[in-house]
Image 1 (cartoon, rainbow, N blue to C red):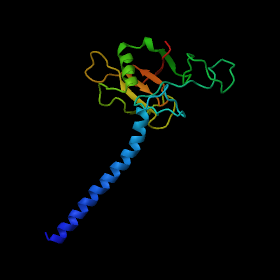
Image 2 (cartoon, rainbow, N blue to C red):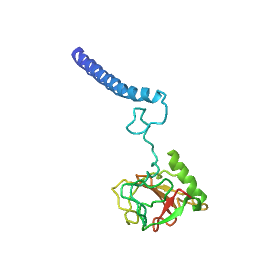
Image 3 (tube, helix red, strand yellow):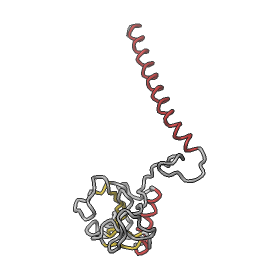
Image 4 (cartoon, helix red, strand yellow):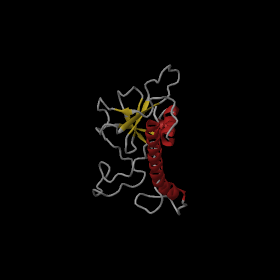
Length: 186
C-alpha cells in the first residue's frame, strides 16, 4: 500500500469517526432535553398538554379511558362522560367477565402486562391478528396476546389474555374460540 493510499484510508476513517461523533452529539442533545426535563421535580403528575415532564410511553396498554358515549339503555346526552366505575364494554355483543372470576394465573398475567413484563413465554406480547374476527375489527397491530399459564400443560396451553390498543382486555380459555371482555371493576 502506498503512502497516498494510507493517507486516503486515514482520512476516510477520520471522517467516519467525525460523522459518528456529530451524530452522537446531536442525538445526545435531543436526549438531554428530555432527560433533564424528566429529572426536574414537578408539583404533580404530568398530563398531556401540561408544562410538566412527559411520562415515558409504557410498554403495556393503558387502562381504558372513560367513554364519552352513554351506556346502553341510558338517556345521557352524547359526548357526556360516563361516571367513573361505570362498566362500558367496547362491544356489547361480547360477554364480560369480572376480573376476580378469572383464574389466578390470568390475574398474574394481567399484573405482568401492567408492569410491562417480564413474560414467561417468548411469544408473549406478539400481535394478535384477530383472523376469526371474534373481537371488534381494528387495524393490524391493535391487539396483542399474552399467555396465561395452564397448570399441568407441557406447552403454552389454550388460555390467553388479549389486549387492545385503548387498554381493553379480553380473556379466552379455549385458544380464541370464544372471548369475554374483562371487567376491571369487579
